Image (cartoon, rainbow, N blue to C red; front, side, top):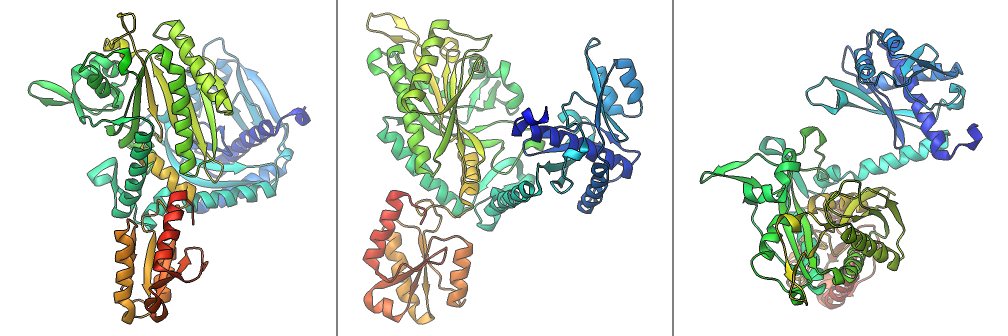
Length: 582
């Protein structure tokens, strides 16, 4: 039977069983421990424990050795179906297991798996014997805190993460990959390159963009705005707060209040910080009577929104409480919708290509069982999404019934240089808000009709996108995005004035260029610039000054050869125009 399993199924069983073996090893070392849950996850597994003391990193090696001893016993995995009463007896000393048992329906089949001396409440599946797990193909990776059942009001447990593979070679490859992930971690790179910070004492989940990070953000925003201008979009700027009426009408106070900041009372009215920009764009739409001749309207905004996230899930730039969403809304007639969706999909793909993301997968989510809006509108909208994907020749997965209650959507996931997928772009129809706000346009026949409304967040948010961008490039950004595109390095103080002239000339031409006039030695300046991942170091000395030239070196050590200052400026301009890495 094992031979018929797919690789994913084999790994699932290996990891699931290894989690059980780890739990047995922990119980042997800490007999008084309470066990919680231990599922397989992507690339590994974890198990949660309540232990008599806090674990230390060195404990992982001790647990690993105990696990290898258990694996060496080549124990079979035995499944037994038991009733709830028998399950309560088996786990009478395990309060977390007892709670799980109590939550099960009375008529459900309850099963346990036994390996060696360890019995766990589990549905399976597992390998048939621990002999199928190579003792050198797993590793325990880290320790973390985790609330029981994800509830901040419940006990804090200790979670041990591990990874397991079929062979030691696969394990080594995965550990190398993890090392590269750690090396590129946007929080680590952000500190090293002085790009951004967060300050718990001043407010959790709020991002401070430092000068270098702000330069990159400025380049992103300038590009974003210019591309939208070319694409026929107009820009909006809307308030950060709105009266409760707005959020009651939109439905946010009914369905989204737990994710909103608490209200502020002003002039005997409640105001809320905006969690989304959509209602504000609708307010702009409602300022005049709209005709079919006015449509489509394409409105974009880099609008900062505020959403409450639990402190336990905040994560650098990737999960925050305040962020700037690259929002856009399209209001169009039913006849225009197909062309608009194709255009917005092509627009999205071009933007991702410019940022260096070439592997993109689409997910099409259709009407769920409970929805609002005319089924005919849903069909037309879904068909426009499908046709756009097929016209672009895009690989996509169909999530039948997986759309939001208010409209079908396309989600785009981009793959980074390490092969990880990131959920970024969303193209989402909305049949709910136009109804709630009684939006209309006057059609050719003189009748008032509902416009189609499409939400489109392309990068998602500038904060999260920046985190993904940092990890994709490891901080070595393409020339057009680099916070410092070149550093002028004089070979000796006598050439400081010429270095200053070179920097001023390139800066005046629109490039982010500075001169290092510090007392450090030339090689130290070059080494520091390379560590800061500056694309080009421009060495200048007597020969360069006489020829009004520079001698470039790249952050990776190449030397393109001496160029006149004018030629280097043209060289840099071409690199920026083509959005090349170097």
